Length: 172
Image (tube, rainbow, N blue to C red):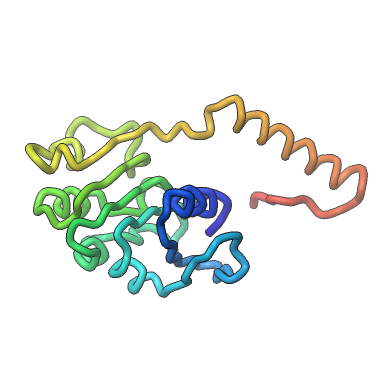
């Protein structure tokens, strides 16, 4: 439930969805600006109709969604992979789509980029191929995002140099 997760959850709330979430940083769901139910990851995966991923790629998240997690999702559920390549086992995802267990998937990032021609998701055929949406990972390439990033960076410089405060959004 970081910045992106919250924005996506808000869009789902605005469309009438109920929100359940898992956050490894233990964000207090009662403090979110919308109603959300915090759940352990395995319980969330098994309960949701749409699983939308928005986590960084770290040792703890690499391979977070594999064959076991995909098999535990509801039959017909939808996976949205918009985090980082390496979070989802793409071969297992292709198998879950091929067998019809998953209703659909939207994939915005891949373990290898650019996606190779022999990638298992590109090899899907028939109905399985109709149930996957590929999108380019370019949400940050807009005038609005560039303006926001520049403004945020400048405000951070002012915060440190003019006010002597600690920087926000520090990257290590």
